[in-house]
Image 1 (cartoon, one colour):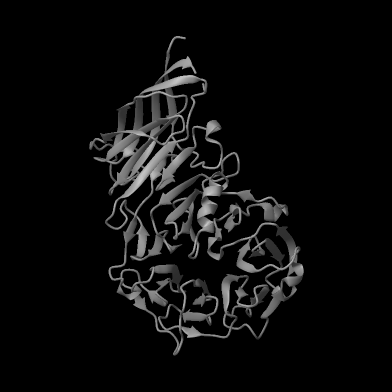
Image 2: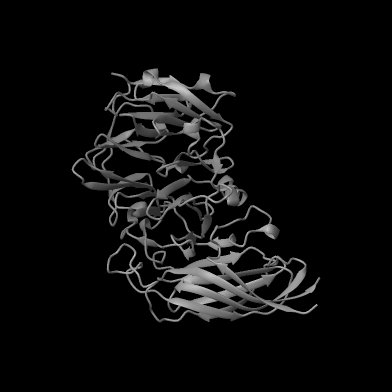
Length: 501
C-alpha cells in the first residue's frame, strides 16, 4: 500500500489535563499522560506553574522541624492585617521575620495542626488535645478560654461551631450568639449526632456553612442542617450517606461549590444541596487512583488551598512531595476538573491572603506563589501526550518532524521527546528557544497599557526531526524552569502512515 504523509494538528495539547485513569488506547488527544509542575492557564494551555518565592529571611525559630504547617491572615475591624503561622510547636506572626507569640503561662504545644479562624475581631486557634487559644484584635499575646478541645471550628450564623474532640467525635458544640468565648452560657449548647447517623457510628471531620445550611462532614456521611441561626431548634434537612470527608483541611469553598477529599477522591458538593439529591461530582475522576495511592500513603496532615485569582484548588501531599492541582474554571464532559500534578515540591500548608497572594509553608518558612524559581532552585516542567494512533490503529506510523509552538522560555533549552507502542524508551532531541521578544497577541489584558505578562514574551516554533516507527506514538517536551514562564500553544506532527501491520 502506498505511504501517506500526514500532518496531525493538536491545538492546546493537554487542554483537558491529566488522565491516568482510563485506558490509553482510546484516550482523547486533548488529555495528557504527564503534566508535571504544570497548570492550565486562562487560555487553556498547559503552562509551567509559578515558583515558591521565599519570603522568610530567618528560619532559625523553626529549628530542625518540618517547617510552617499552618497559615492564616487576620484582618481587624480597622483593616490592619496580621499573618499568623505555626511550626516547630510554636505560633508566629510576620512573614519575612517569624516573631513568636506570647502563650499563656505553662501552656505547651505538642503539634502544629491548628485550625485558625477569625470571628468578631478575634482570632481563634483550635487543635485536638489543646486548650483553645485566642488573639484579640491581632494581639501577639494569646489567651485561653473555656471551650471544648476540638479539632474543627467554623464561624457561621453568628457563632462558633466546634467538633471532633478526643473521646467524643459525635457531638457538635456551639457558642453563644456573637460570643466565641462562651460555650456554657446564653444560647450556647450541644447537639449529639449519634442518633441521626443512618448506618452506625460516625465521626465529625469538618464543618462548613453553605447556601444557608450548616454542613457537617463526617467520615462516612454528610449532614445538612437548616435553621442553624437558632441552633437549639435547627433541624436535619438531608443526609448524604456513603460519602464522607477524610481530611479536615481538604474542605474548601470555591464560591459556588465546596470541594472535599473523600475515600474515593476529591468530591464536589455543588448544587446537590439545593436539589436534595445524593450524587456528588468526582472532581478527581481522571486521576483518582494515582492520587488516592499518594493520599493513602500520606503520613502528615493533608492541607489544601483555593485561589480564585489562579482558578485552581490545590491538595498538598507532603509525604510524597506532591501537589494535585485542579482547574476550577469549569468541568469536563465527564464532570471532572482538569488536573495537573506538581512533583518534587513540599508544601505543608498554605493560605490565600486578602489581596489574592498565596502563601505556602515549608522548611523555608513562608513562600509566595510568584516568579518561576523555587527559592533559588529550578524545577522540571514536563508534558507528554497519551499514546495516539491518529485514528488508524492498524497501520505503521513513522514520525518525520515534531513542531512545537512555545510561548515564553526565552533562551531555554527545551527537549522534544517521542516513543512508540506504549514504551517509555523515549528518543529525545534538544532545541533552544530564541530570545527575540514580542508581545503576546499585541494586546492588553485589562485595557491598560501593559501587555498580559507586563513584559513582552517569546513566541517560538521549535522543530524536531523524529525517527523510528510504530503503531501508536507518544510525544512530549521537557524544560527546566529557570525564572521565565513557559506554555505550549500547539503541536504539529508530520508522519508517514504506511502499511498495515
